[in-house]
Length: 137
Image 1 (spheres, rainbow, N blue to C red):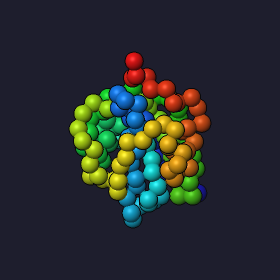
Image 2: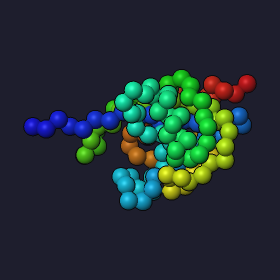
Image 3: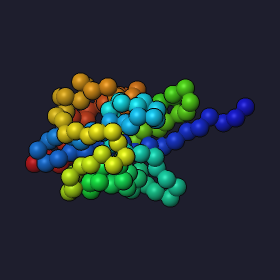
Image 4: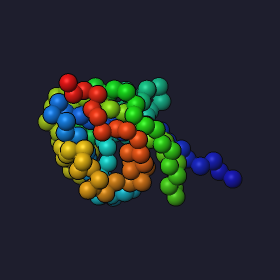
């Protein structure tokens, strides 16, 4: 029997100084098209989760972030593969978000996140204490 595909993905809870969080919408044509998610992507060989998060945010949204502490890690089995999602707090540094490799993006308040449809693995990341930004004074 073939081994099930397993990927490690970095997902950023990206905080702006005013407490707003950056989310992105998955593009059409891929898995979970139209769903919203914490931005990020696959960890490449030789990268740390923090390095992958910073690279993926640059590539997908054109902004700079500084990866911070991990707030949760979940493993979720989809029909086609197993995903381990490492959720990291991240501080927005600069740049105006652009939909480079995403369908859309938004700055939202923490209490607004549950009004958006997220893939199951992303939703499970929120099963912890995450709502306090480590970056606010």
